[in-house]
Length: 262
Image 1 (cartoon, one colour):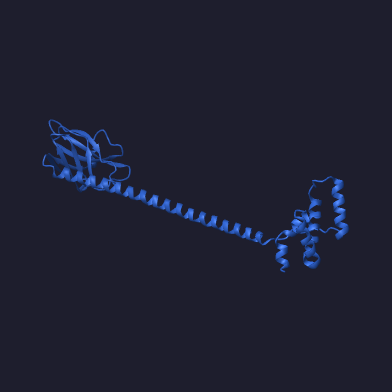
Image 2 (image 1 turned 120 degrees about the vertical axis):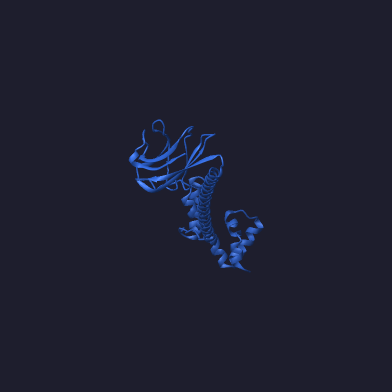
C-alpha cells in the first residue's frame, strides 16, 4: 500500500473531523495501527486542529473547548505550534502572478510603442498635408502669374532703374478694362529691414500727381515676386519707391528705384 498517496488523499482529515462512516473509521483505525506513518499523520492533524483552535474563537463553549483540548493533550502530549506548510500551489500562484505582471508590462510597452508610432505617423501626415497645401498655393501663384503674363488684354509697362539703383527693373501688367494692376518686382533688390517698396500711379500733366496703389509686402516670402496692387483707372506712368515700413503719403523721390511711362 502506498501510504503517502493514502495520506495525501485527505481521508485522514475527514477521519479526525468525524466525517467518515463507521466502516471507514474502522478501516482508518486499522491502517493507523498497521502503518506508523498514518498514525503519525493523524496525530499531526489533531495537534494542528488544537493549535488553530487556540488562535480562532471556537464555536463550542469555553468549558467544552478546554475539555477537548485537554483530552487531546493527554493523548498526544503538549500541543506544538504548527507552521503552515508551503504548498507547491503557492509557488505556482506566485509564478503565475509574475508571468501576469510581465505580460502586463510587455503589453504596456507595446501600447506605448504603438502610441508613439501613431504620434509619429500623425505628425508626418500633418507635415505632408502642409507640404501639399504649400505646393498647391505655389501652383496657384504660378498659374496666376502665367495668366497675367499671357493675358493679351494687359498693357505691359516696363520700369527702368533710376539713379539710386540703376540696375533695378520692374514690370507693370495693367488691364485698363478691369483696372487690375500686377507688379512683377523680380528685378528689384531685397528691401532693407524696416523698409518696403511702394507703387505709384502717376499723372504727368498738367502737373505731376502721384497716387499710391499699394505696398509690396512680404517681399521675401513671395517666390514669384508678382504682387497684385490696388486698381487704378488712370495712369500716364508708374514708379516704385523705397519707403519706411507702412508706406508714405507722398513718394520719396531720392528713393525712386524704377520709373516707366505707359
